[in-house]
Image (cartoon, rainbow, N blue to C red; front, side, top):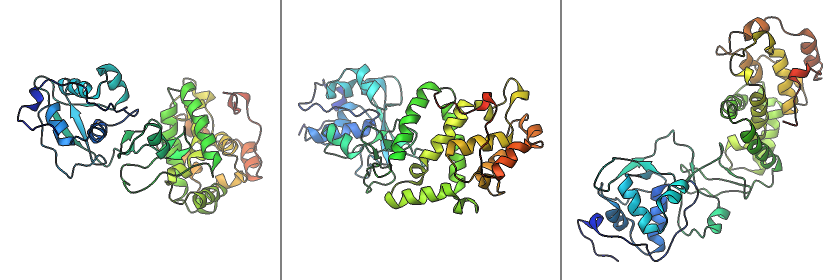
Length: 336
């Protein structure tokens, strides 16, 4: 082990004997911890060589803290790792702190809102030959590894393990379609996903939704995946509604031509089609999450004149459990 000194950050550095490959989106503290473990060197000693900062304490775990580095400290990390700065910065999730001299670091404690930090799946860890615990910022909107079809363990559950999603292929299929949708609808997909997630999360809380066919699908998946997060269980339906919102963004903002905006009945008919709902008339129940969404106070102003004059033919079709063929401009374009 290297000898300790008060001015370790002033010493010239060279690459450590064992080079460690960083994970995409890996946190700096996680990478530094793995780098020290691979080279049989304490994490605190590596911190002393990076720069000046608060001392490392034993209670600072990678699922609770991350490091913030200034430019000089990050340069010293690149020297230790053996990677150039630019490639390392593109791979790691780097948090910046104080600028100027000397090299310095600071501790960042995670808040309850930082729920996009996960452990890599066990197959990714084996692929990168990871022997220690690692933490990454997930690239997708849900904790799912599409490469290996597994769930990702959030940082708030350090003792949990990832699970295979192959017993529920509809989840993997939906997420592959969502990957294509994100490339084609970059401007609207994030807002669409947030709106769809709000509807599906509200579905289980509604009295009518507890006995709905959609809720029965979720219960069947939960039996196959008992410890998987509920948002992953609901993801096929969430992505179906996301596709609807992303293809028709006028549902989420005021369109240029209000007269061409859809009515609530048109929206419910299309939602039933996208969700492949076997009993569309249930969407007209007063406690239905989709119907409640159409009656929300934050709907655009052009929505309300249409809401008071529903299309009676579509309403009748929904009551009879059939989905009508709608106007061509609002027909689901499955090829998009």
